[in-house]
Length: 244
Image (cartoon, rainbow, N blue to C red; front, top):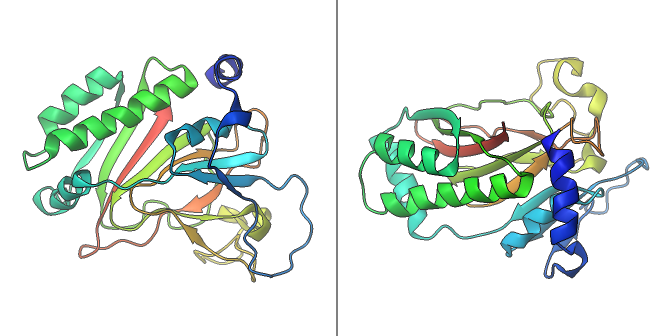
């Protein structure tokens, strides 16, 4: 798998021990006692984009680059109004995706900044995992794509919300994995959440790398997450990047 090849390359080029200002949040249980779980994986957050390289650490399940969008958010908000049904799904190099998005997205102030920002994330994702092409999905959403807690059956995915409510996720200590998805006894969107657990949410602009169930060193322990609620009056602009 490409992710295995990239692991060696990244370990040769990046000294993860020297990445500074990263906050590792392993449980955040708010003084709630849970049963001891083996191999609890942490979530690392930072205002420094280099935090994304921490996804290669075996004890990390999600790396979050916390950032402010600035003028980029103005275009994202305008897109919810000018193209309320916008859906784009494709794959290619950053140059190809940049060209296509420039053609498809409606013209408005700061459009160029928005396309440049998406291209930046594509470049970072491709570099991190040694990819020639990246799968990109950019959608305006008026409903939750995946309303129930679940784990992606992939090695890793990048997600970011440009406008609206950010994705929701659970710490490992708050998860009951055998109740996720079809394992839930009822059609409850909270199936898989410990009765004393807490739902966490990414902020607008956050760039998160989430390990899936097929990450080589953490098989079956991917990040549990779901789409937040959305509606015609509370839309979201959501981006995800995948390995090709």
